[in-house]
Length: 94
Image 1 (cartoon, rainbow, N blue to C red):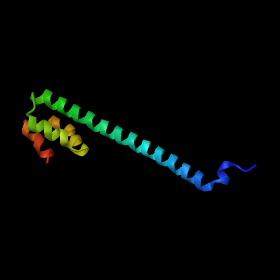
Image 2 (cartoon, rainbow, N blue to C red):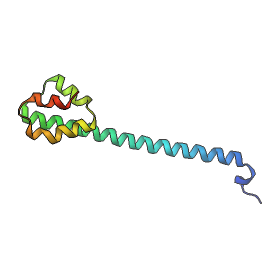
Image 3 (cartoon, one colour):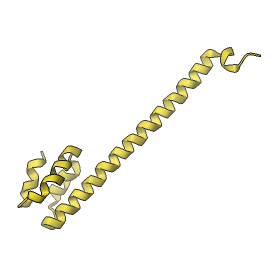
Image 4 (tube, rainbow, N blue to C red):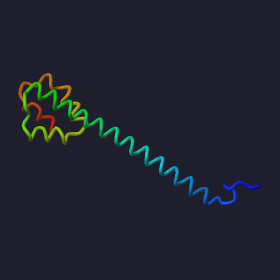
């Protein structure tokens, strides 16, 4: 008796493609979610550390930090120990 996969190769290929697509979509979504969460966490940490150093941050600086890319947050996190004034943050935010 022939397998269902061999009787209807088109249907089997279609199903296989559909399953692969779903799996790929789930993996992409999971990775995207992890990266987004990591960026949000880093943003919150940078804001907390800067607030501890300088007090309440002005809303415009908080917004710029919130809009910053990961590499900018990394630069701020590394450089904040050398910051003398709150305006020093601005050189990392474009």
